[in-house]
Image (cartoon, rainbow, N blue to C red):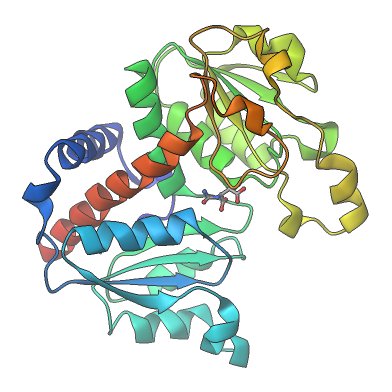
Length: 306
Ligand code: NCD
């Protein structure tokens, strides 16, 4: 059974195929209506979500399939103490494919081991978020045309930001990519990501605490929210949350062809005045999420039918 737990579960040619298919879906949505007729997607969200859950559901409905699920742990039997293993063993009898989000790192691996149907990791704690990365890759493909040769700045909470971890994993497989890691000391990229995806692969990178001094070098700026829910102390969160705020003033230092991405939700880290800058692509990025998830659902259901 094929699952998607880590973005590296997909090969580079498979990612290319998903992007081609997402492009085809956007060009000819009518051709895909009914492609998942009589199929059911379960969305099991033990943590809050807007984009990920709703884009999965919109994706399945647009393929003519149906959806069921829960959007908070409190309304599921997790509140009674049921294990992820048991929940997945049961729900996989009610659905053909499952997207799950959980606050514990590794929960989707446990879930997949007990599931009868494909499981998609829709975010596990401060670990990984592969379908956000597929969304990011589709966006980069559209705005830059290629993944090779890009200098990618990742800014904000690199420690707990699971979207950052998965995006670095994915981008580390393309040629001549450089990473610029911008964070306060306390929120630096964890070594499990830095070692495996950057150092072991001999990829060029720099670390900086200062966004302005590196902004002019970037092809892509990936801004992130400080992940309040993963902090042990509210005081520490309050101290770090406004470390970086992107404003039109700062953007004067950036290249005219910079692309500003953000997985959203945004809190304070991008001023709303930036939204009208042609370099801001984060709302387009959120829309792309539906189409790449359509392509992914089709791929995993096709594989399951083999
Ligand atoms: C991200 C997440 O859940 O990790 N959101 C999303 O899925 N688009 C980013 C975040 O919550 O900051």
